[in-house]
Length: 268
Ligand code: ADP
Ligand code: MG
Figure 1 (tube, rainbow, N blue to C red):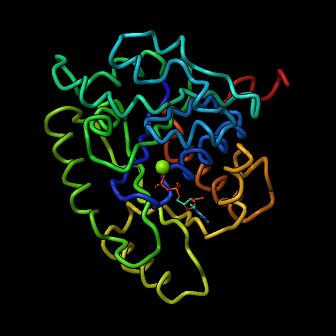
Figure 2: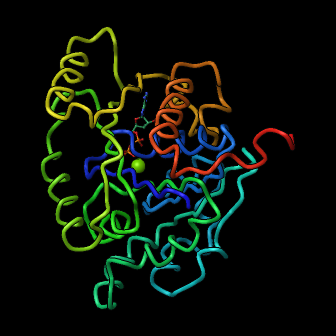
Figure 3: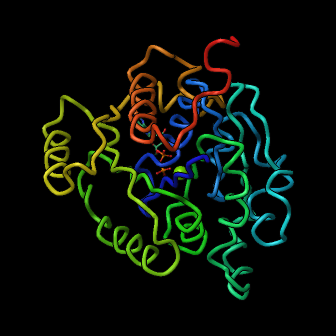
């Protein structure tokens, strides 16, 4: 069964979307069947893999609120054969309000995604910068969460609140939710501050921190404007290689959960 991983942090601009897109693309490049779920009304993950959010009719919102079959809204990217997208559009903003009165309102995304888990090796959910109902849904649907932390001032700000939310979800909605890892992003080797943040986060969170650290890399910030993941923009860039390393680290950690890649050896 595939692993569902939410990428969450209520702070904006820490690298959630960049990490979701490029982790998903790297897993797909390694031939793991991967679904990228855009759970942010800003729809940056949708445009980041080449779709115009304005053209999107049905998003995960319609699955959660109107009960549309998740299977029917999945888009195949033309970018990588193993990468699919469940898109978002601006109406996701209204979902929180409309969902308030639904029974089991925290479990709508789980109901939509869990049936897909057999079809994919990995399902990566890009969350919005909030701890609202959609993010609670994502954390309830997920097996684990990746928490990106930017190597910047106030890196740890808000992390306590997020970890507390994870604890509440574990106790009430999803007792198996694990922390897949804390991911240090936008690391700049030349900055003492960056190095201090790395040390501080490792001191606090120890083995929870991924070995892979994502550097600040211009190719990573450029590729969304082309609607492609960095691996298709510049596969040799530090940004691309670091997300490939992250994908390998996650595959290794989950070696039993993740099935062998499709048609791994003999058939190809
Ligand atoms: P979030 O989804 O958490 O709001 P984003 O992934 O959208 O954060 O990143 C915020 C901004 O920083 C974007 O403009 C993105 O292109 C840029 N960015 C993210 N990670 C990197 C990186 N490692 N190197 C350079 N720019 C980055
Ligand atoms: Mg984002």
